[in-house]
Image (cartoon, rainbow, N blue to C red; front, top):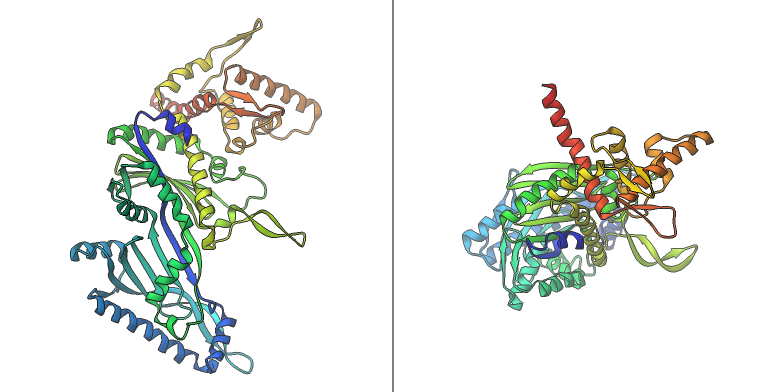
Length: 511
């Protein structure tokens, strides 16, 4: 991220990294069929009484929600068609002037994970099943968390979902600390004290989220006071969005640059690049999944999204003056966390796949911030498009060293473009590349020794020509090379010229 900020420092007023949307889920210990059967028996009931038992308690949940709405004089709305619930709740809050407390309660029939009773040997059994039931949405404006909602299914096992926004939490905290800011929609366009604001945002992960979320669960689930009194919810992070916002001085400072950034991401970022941004070493034989880049026009602008399996990284502009890069984690097991675990029958401190438990939220922030930083660093070559386009002409000029001439590169020649594509692969961003790596991309796999030697010598000459122009640099004490900052700027520009402008000129000549 540092490279990008240095390139555009004259146009940037500040940067802020903070959680955006966070989705928590809570599960009771009776979320599995065996535990549910034991729970039924512990209450002195038979399996055949299951349907009556759960229906009665489901009605208690609904009655409690309606009483809660009556006592606070807030609307209880039954939805019969698809509705953007958050937008509807915000309109109600604005209409009624609600600044704190319950805004409204929506009810809707939706799919959920619950149970059903089936015949068994000697007696019926309870099994997990997907079904539909009435779900309740409680929308709040909390004093410390801002605008949020709690979704609860009214059928056993009463799974709860809590959704909040990190920017709302930060705004509430800054209000209490007297820090001035300007906010447009879901983005800050100016903050009086950015350093303190970033410190507050960083402390978000250190809060006792299990206690905070359990307090909301007890508020909406009356059974926690008696029937489920000895239980508590186990909380996980179902989805997290962590955003890095670059605040530009005005709309004009970002507009032209953003258009070039979008163009660069779609034309120059490969699947290997996307995996590198998300902390992987690139495409390899053990990778089972897909990597997709999507470009989408939406109101009020355009966004690009790169998806690796169930996790993705996005870039879009907010209000025309904030550039947002956002990492979304749905499947944390693709990342690592350092913790105690068993290796070879012994407990050791090591790196293990990251689980969804809410106590790992700090690691979600670390992984996402690193991904956002790598993405922005890769975009740092797009800072001033005039300079790379002007310098690209030097690629074609020969270089003289020690009485020998080394010919230049042709940005529109297929052979040279293939070389640039091979070297700019995201697989080599972390460990660099070797002669044989480039040889495999350019010529395929050869088995005959004379052919290998001939191809290796040719690649060595190509690497020397690149090195003499400062496009690549040797990694000390190794046989590996890395792409220099100048190389990133010039070769990515050359690829863009080849893939976009050259085909356009060719089509014009053909017509």
